[in-house]
Length: 546
Image 1 (cartoon, rainbow, N blue to C red):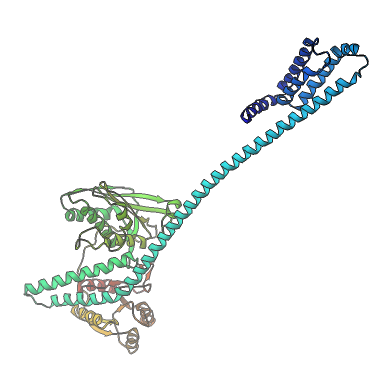
Image 2 (image 1 turned 60 degrees about the vertical axis):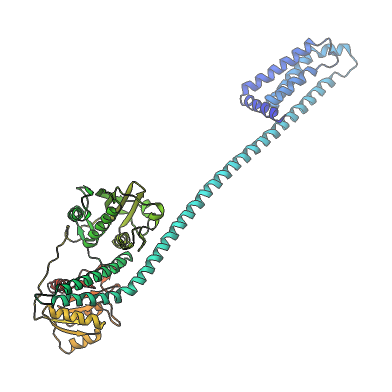
């Protein structure tokens, strides 16, 4: 019944929209009512207006209240003229006004009732439609709010992951910093002593002794490399960034890779000839590319293809918001791809963690990727890793574009050159560790210097104040009470032209700004060999005082 009423109401809404149709319905209903009454006059002599009520009901429903009143009025006039005279003649004693009045009042009541019912149904339908809209809006609101909550949860999880990564990085940094100073001091003693011992074996040394010394030196170098890699991951490795020609650097590294990776690996390069220069530490960038290439080789045990690409990339704000410590701007992209076995999702999730490796014991430390990641972050760059099992891996390195005010362009590998520093010069060694100080003194003597050594910055100041003339200050950076930079500043008030060579196994910010070596600093990282010491001494002596 309600469905039929709703259907009829729907038709009525359509007919009520047009004034012409409404008037047409009113006129038609009137004609039918009057015509029907005239046709049935022999049978309805006592009820003159009865045939009009049906038309009034139809008009009131399909055309509305006022068309129904029009039907009433026209019907009353017509019947008054056509029917009522005969009724009055047949029943002269009746009151002539009573039928017409009854008809008008009844018609008015019928029209009002139908209009009220129609409007009540209309209101009900409107409420139902509004409720349906509200339910739909509520559903949309629930969906939108659910998506918003999911986005907030995803953002929170991403923030928690970044916080976890930052806390892990900070913990490793503290751990590394805590052990690096002492550990590198011990390695400096080992490395330096082995180097001195080998130098003093004479012109015809016992080959067995040389072999043992070389093995020990190799082990010490590997231990030092582990510490340096941890420092790189913790973003505490001293960097010397400069303006680099990326294509030239990649080309020079390629020559080394062809000898290192073997004939089973086919190396192809796609270098954008319009690539911008980058601003990065050359040695660390070369090491990063080599580490990734070696990892790619290990992922292709049966051979495959290694692709190295360079390109210019602009990272927008939307991308950078998804990654910690990354700002929008222009970057140089170095992409290294292989056709190896790829990584499973759970391996990708931990690929950058230090000491995580899928290689067999003794075949990897798990610090290669983590070192690259730390170097890039310390250089204000970014790393992206894409991998699919059975299809290979692509690692993209992003480094900031070099500005116009950066150093002159450099590229390619630097050869190790042995310098012969001037002799008969006076060096003051300042080192708080007795063993390291003895090794440094012996190394300087080996190079032909006149050496004075002290165990604290305060004693160094006292010697200078007492009139000791020196040509070079060789000082540790991290020392109790006063660091090496503070000692230099104090001494240069008396000797503005003093040449200084710093050494450290772990620095904070005494001679670094955000891990970048200050421009007026010559730094020798522990542990070091006598040749490395000689090279840095040469640089320090030939650098103008600042």
